[in-house]
Amino acid sequence: MGVNVPGCIRTSLGCTGLVITPMPTVMFGLIDGSTYSDYDGKHGHYTFDSANGIITISDGSRKGWRYRKTAEWSFTLIDNATGQDHYTCPLETAKNPSHGPW
Image (cartoon, rainbow, N blue to C red; front, side, top):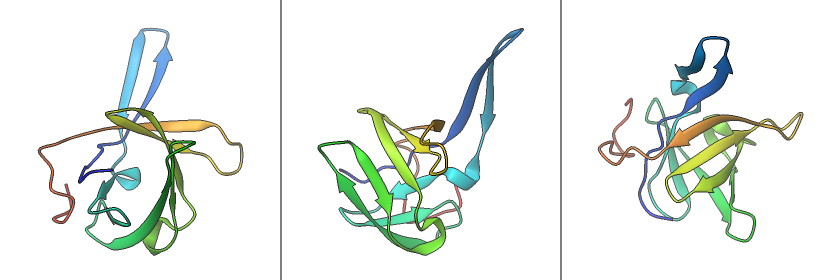
């Protein structure tokens, strides 16, 4: 897990095609192997289960949130109530995870 900032978006297929909605509240940046930054620049900690590709936020503003690694370049927010994936967060290498908001 390197220093990364996924930019989260919600995607859905509508009658007229693909709908993309930016969602800054679910954005996060990985500062190091255990520290994350939220969209507003507040820090907390996470664990990464490499066997399942799951990031679990252990404290801070996103405590309890989970993300599934869906590709080398993206994570998807998991809804803890339903277990379903909701928002995809593609990697945005131009953003610095230590300096939010993005």
